[in-house]
Length: 124
Image (cartoon, rainbow, N blue to C red; front, side, top):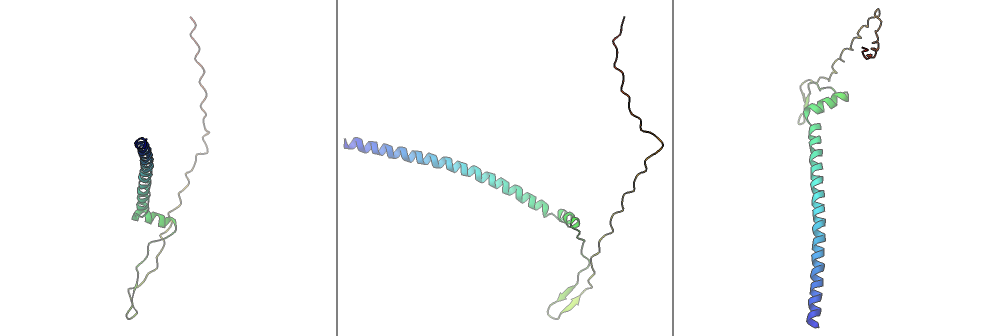
C-alpha cells in the first residue's frame, strides 16, 4: 500500500509539474508575440522620427511655422570678449505672387446637353 501511495503521489506531482510547465510555455509564447509586435511598432515609430528629423522635412516644417534661414552669424571670443564677424539679421523671403484670376467669357451661354430620344423598335 505504501509503494502504491508513493507512486500515486509521484504521478500526481508529475502531472501537476507538467501542467505548470505547459501553462508557462503558453504564457511565454504570448509574451514573445507581444514583444515582437512591440518591437515592430518601435521600428515604425523610429522610422517616422527619422523621416521627421531629415533636413528636408525640418526645412519644410520650419518654413510652415514662419521661420527663415539665419543670416551670417557673429562669434564672441570668450577670453577677451572680442566679436568676430559682422552679424546680419535673417530676412524673410518675399511672399510668392498671388495667382491672377482667369477671365471667364461672358458672351457665350453655357450649352446643356439635351437627352437623346430612346430608340424605337423598327416596325416592318
